[in-house]
Length: 491
Ligand SMILES: Cc1cc2nc3c(=O)[nH]c(=O)nc-3n(C[C@H](O)[C@H](O)[C@H](O)COP(=O)(O)OP(=O)(O)OC[C@H]3O[C@@H](n4cnc5c(N)ncnc54)[C@H](O)[C@@H]3O)c2cc1C
Image (cartoon, rainbow, N blue to C red; front, top):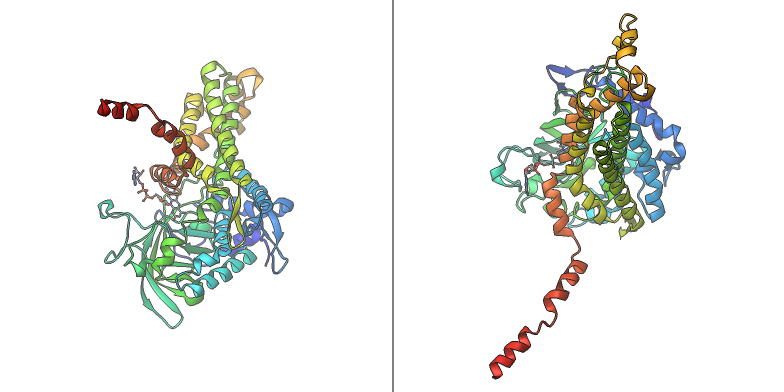
């Protein structure tokens, strides 16, 4: 099967799976009120790839079938540019609200398969071959994949490095004729209700003696023993005027419990191999996946700037103070755009003939965005003030008794009609103030480790060569002190 349509994607979600939300064990995610909007929102992503086939699709290198370009294993700078166009289409569709649209994992696994040489190190040849086979399955069946790479927090004082006898993190507890049995828990599977399969791969390094915790695999969502506890829904009503974003983009997040789950042998990519587990994420994964996630983030920033501008125009709020804040927002979007461009232009071969963007500009961006996004929300709320909450609903606008009054009293500046004004401020509230907005801010702070850790990492991996040279000039130049001392000694 090649690239799927939205209808095919929704049909694929109909199977049995152990998904819990609020008081419900959900039988059918497509029809459940907590999930239906986002299921259809994501279906739109699948339809989009056919609508913009030139940007989004490419032939599978072996079968020639049309697959999404996010599955591409880049082998040149041109491939990186080609992939950019497809990723941008998806980011524009969700205006960056859905961080884990399926292209995120497609890019991740394309990168893994491209660097199968790294996965095959330390005696893990079979796991690496399974991974390459899996990536072919993923792209040819256009699978929607959720993932979980983080161990649940129980006691921060125990440190980051997991290992025995900790029973909570996912670990292997046995072997069967067909594979292995795993037990424990992981966080935080965004997209879980809308996924066909679950991916487990390394996050933070683990202790050298933690072999049983060194696991990577992919399994179907309906695998017996897999349980997903979703957070409370942020989905608004299905009315697109009232809840333009939360009606369709609540991608969900789930705590994952592995209650003695059997993983088939051919789905195992790392089987108790700490050497590979601790190494495999340290080179190309970050620069590769950052292309997807930073195109998404940049799109979200540009959308936020556009929205805030419309908001200010709607109430004639274009004095120096508001305009300064709009300029601040534009600067974030432009810095992000420039970083992505720089990373793509300086892409290079990472090994095995595989090309990824240059990680340095993307590392800087990743470390900074967790402070920019909350600020962007703050600006929208400052500019919006009470107007964000003085917004008639679609039902009120349609009410013949209310409509003439709404038109008279709730219109905007410079002749803007009341419905346009309501749409602008409802969109802004859904972006910066609603439950979905709050979850989105949490996502931007943490989705790939906390901002604090990313800032530390940025410093640790940075190339110091030029900075050292600039400083050394002053530290190593002849200041005359030494000569003066010698002279003093001689006298
Ligand atoms: C909305 C959302 C969606 C997510 N989706 C996914 C997903 O799909 N798949 C997945 O696997 N994971 C997902 N995650 C989990 C995410 O990967 C982790 O939350 C992230 O790695 C941060 O880890 P942590 O929670 O242990 O926080 P930590 O990194 O421990 O940070 C928590 C806080 O502790 C402090 N802190 C910790 N370490 C340091 C340090 N070294 N220096 C200074 N301060 C420090 C900081 O104040 C920081 O804010 C998601 C998280 C969120 C919030």
